[in-house]
Image 1: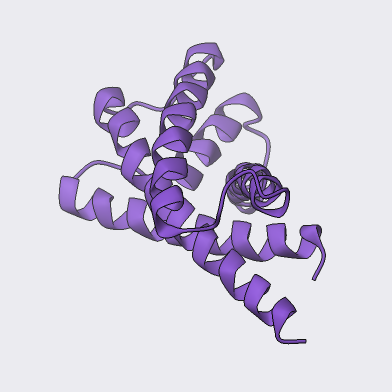
Image 2 (image 1 turned 135 degrees about the vertical axis):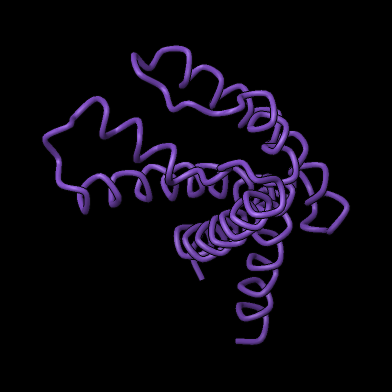
Length: 152
């Protein structure tokens, strides 16, 4: 299986698990941690003429694009043997990615003319567990693709 396929499979898996985790944290914390929702809000405030459907697609599209970017970096690290695709390394990648994600969101909200109204501190700190979930799911999906490749 080529790197693009591995990136696509692991990136989608990681992004879906991360999003589900953020939705669960939203319910438990009574705060909206949904990445696609916030991206949709920012798109709608910049381009209000877009239909609700188009805004939703844009929010999810931006979210999955970032997931694929993170996954591409992980796959590159694994394929070049810079790190092993282990649970321990997934946890480390998740923490590092969470910090990076926190700063990406912080910068995004800062430059956006009309960012969403939310508890930013809670949202930023939730980035760490969200990215740990992403990294673990991404790693597991990558391992499955690597096992499929080995068994051919």
